[in-house]
Image (cartoon, rainbow, N blue to C red; front, side, top):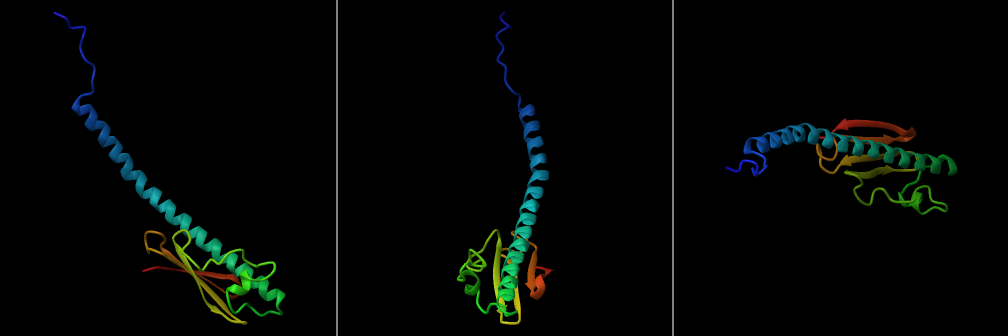
Length: 137
């Protein structure tokens, strides 16, 4: 009898144990990855609003305290206060809107494209670079 020619292979139990371990690791890793993505989107939204606010405040300082009345005043100046229009499309899961732009006031808002998925907070920046947040619903 020839016992030395046994085939070496994984048993069904061994394969099922490996699959169970991979599933358990995925159950822990995927929610953390998603949360990290939301945190990155929210940090980027705050940074973008601060960039917009800095441009508006700089414009005001150069124009006798008068803020721009249109976003194009920031991008169309020579040299421009902003190199791009942040309100034209969603960026990293957030939509940016500058609803109030008058010579004396401004208010810009960052709203998640999908509340809970791309972000959990709505951020608003107003005169003097005051940044506030509220939960989205």
